[in-house]
Image (cartoon, rainbow, N blue to C red; front, side):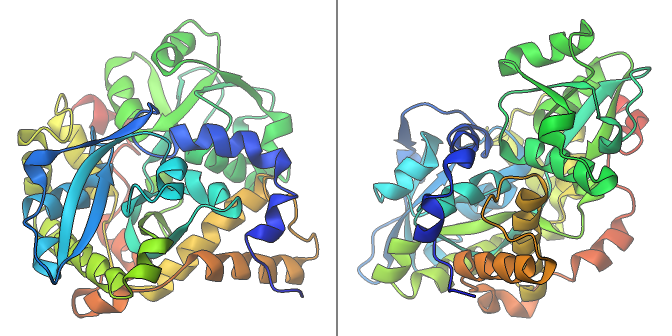
Length: 383
């Protein structure tokens, strides 16, 4: 099989271009304005032997908890990085293309942008899934497999929750969610009301939005929670600008070690890390017990290469199953080879720098954790 490159996919990516464009807005945890705003109060002290790196984050929820912990505990400075911390208010693909950002938390919504040339490498893991879907009692939906013919609201036919809903449906039924499900796009502020008014049968999105809605909405329940149904795979990754890695070969190790240190700190007391994030204004903090429940769901971890590679492969396979990898061969063996080459293309493993404190395999962590917070809606109602 001919060696795959990102360039070879551009000509066949027209069908996915709308997914990429909308996914850039949805893939992260924040807005889609037109710039990145520097947080001058959190810049690191300059040092001639430190690598200057722009560290971007969206804020607002505990999805980026390791980023907040790294900032507040000087993990970047301690590992030879001079951080310029910014809040992201722009399309991250654009920021990467202009070399305006060196790091951001990479989610499944960005994978297609890599096919179209985004200069990025994934160097270690961050945490498991942070997406979910909710419906109302009586709507006849208990899982993604029940979505055939149903009207489902979303903020765009793109992003992780859309891809994962389609993938879960397709794997359970053999159908294609983009054809069998009646997807309807709403502004995010109107989604919940559409569900309450029975304009849609279900809605999907990021946990930090949907969990409070389950708490506050009579009869609301989850029909999928990615931290439960996809808990054997990481959802979010440490991403580094590939131009930065070319310019500073040691940057990958330093960035991976900074996040390994942050991860070690937060895993010692996840609830304390959430309380810090609320106190410092990184997260909303309206429902601290929900934020703590979600943070414990996410099984933050680093340094496990097997899970790192398997999780990246899984995200590509979700896109295949959902019908977004139009060039993927239909032959099973060739499809596996194709997905593996995609995985190898975007992965540049640097997690060995944190191997001494590496997380246990996710499959072991899940057994210890048990069911994810929210699997029983009463847990959310009482939070």
